[in-house]
Picture 1: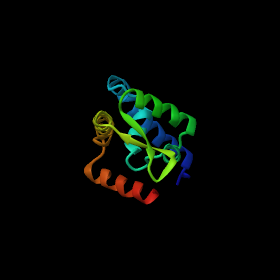
Picture 2: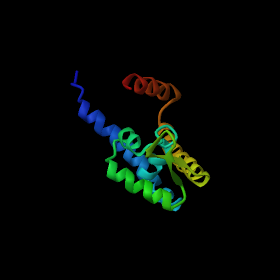
Picture 3: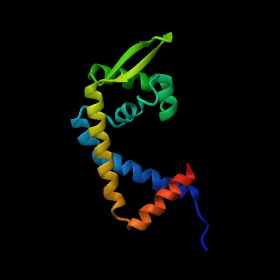
Picture 4: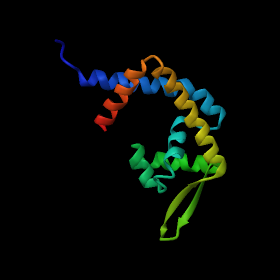
Length: 135
């Protein structure tokens, strides 16, 4: 029996995710987004403060600041003073930002679905269960 190499499994998973992301990068660019900007938009509702976004996405705070500025300039995000703490800015998706986020997420979902289609329904179900166990 061969020894399981966790690093190899991690590497395969990472390569899969990067392949999916790379496969839609041009289409995301057509929407006016970089991949990481899409991830920022997708997390804003749950994490509306830049520091929270940075922690959630494991992105350095200065990078999140750059993405937020670009997304704001594109009309996809609004920064508002938090009424509960006037020192903080709360981020909010604009209608255009929500639309582009949904379109970008659909592109990623479709690309990932193509990869999942290589597995049987039972294998897909097992993969889901295994991934949930790992979280």
